[in-house]
Image (cartoon, rainbow, N blue to C red; front, top):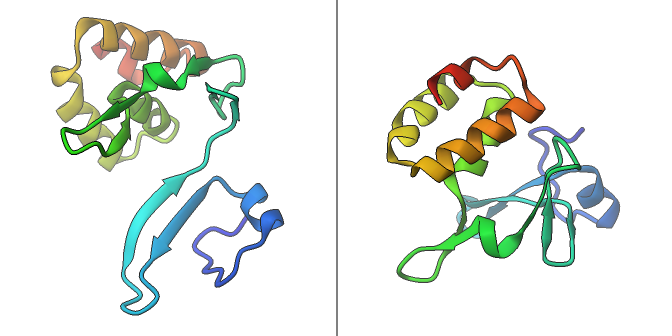
Length: 124
């Protein structure tokens, strides 16, 4: 629902039916930010691909030196695993060598849990 649709004034019902929002500058109409809204229970993130996966936000959100928050790379790759398009494969190939052993283990466990036959598992 709503894929690619521009909502000038999205109400609560529209936001509840989608999980991704692109924000743009109203003057230039340039898109500035892509926001994924995820289910949660207080300070606990709930994976929308499998609600049995729940992790504390303190464990999955990192910050740049300037304080900008970002999702840990292993969870970004978990989302990309669903479709594993060529661009996702490129991200996987470029990111996995940079992950710690613990991050690779976490990614492998999560992918195995959600997508047990996934082709990335043999590379992890």
